[in-house]
Image (cartoon, rainbow, N blue to C red; front, side):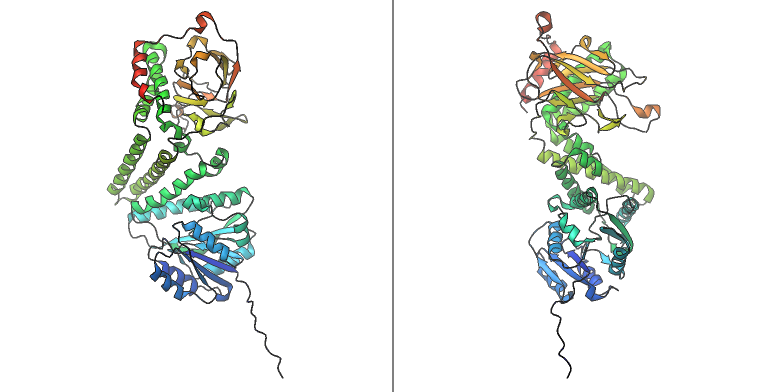
Length: 535
């Protein structure tokens, strides 16, 4: 008599869990699920499919559910956040590997088999797969395909960390959960947040070139803008709560974000006032033509913001974006010029989205700077700086270049101080430095400035302080233009600034304590802006 056959009530765990979130399917949801469920060369018992839906299209959900096998699942959760759905799917997955893909991507038949083979022969913790274009229907889609291929060549390098993207990304499930998965509050930018976190913690990401999905590209600027805007706003939200050094290491320098305080009307008025007075002194023969040009340019940029605040910058960014889109329409029959126009449109979409986020979230609430007597500019938060360039290094020392008009927000107790700015005599160019220094509304006398071995020192007195805790030190100067001497740098460089230190001293007496009298021109200027001083 044959012994009874025991039924395995606990089938082996699948090797791969394929997670597909249905929103944003672009009409390809059925083809996407079929390409995984029915067309893979990988044995069906080696993978499971988890479809996560927001429940907004019950008819589509029913059609997709009919395609799933007995070991597959559909999870419904009402949310508009795509990355939250992927996190829910990852928590329910049983496979050793997670393969995350978009609902408008069609997996090639060998995709899962090649992914399994890749991880069997590599020590990587995760890997992105190759993305193949579905035939672009128009010139705009062709430009996006070319744009994507350009960046894919960088992302696919072994030393590049940017390998997390929804088109096709595989990672060991335990690592994904240990590292927290997608921080879904940052939208599409959460993919880069996860990629940077994995890299910063020593996780190795590879590129599985033999595993591929086919992906459609956007056909209109409106579709592209929705994607870029979501990514960029997530980037700004992440930068707002993360260390500057970490963000610039992984995500680079974002000029609009670094200069976000410049759209505050009160900041713009302070900078405008200093630039105006420097312009008049330069015009009266105390500076050069380069100083006049620099201050006129600064005044033209500051004046609209001083009156209109963020709305002016947002209007300018929107107008610039519309102009770029119109230019791309003109060159739609010339792929070489159209690609340049496309890249320009992309950059201006990013700029507009950053300014929009700043105007909504940061333009009206700025925390007061911390009280201190010494400020090393490489460590000062970007909120306290306006007009300075990104941190760079010289002889292992970090510093920032100022611009034609730069402002430092400070919090120093009221009193008399000797102030010292460390420059290391780094500006050694044929163009002589013409410098203006202002503490709040008061100009520091040029005769009191002292240079000594890379140190600029001057004195401020208690009458120069404002009633509010925040004080402002403003620098104006004629900038260096490196490109004029053959250096490939398009920045306007002012004063190299390593640190600013305040040392208490005895209050001046007699004529040293007399406040400078205002000229008729300065009185008119102060009255012009008196209504907005509380901003």
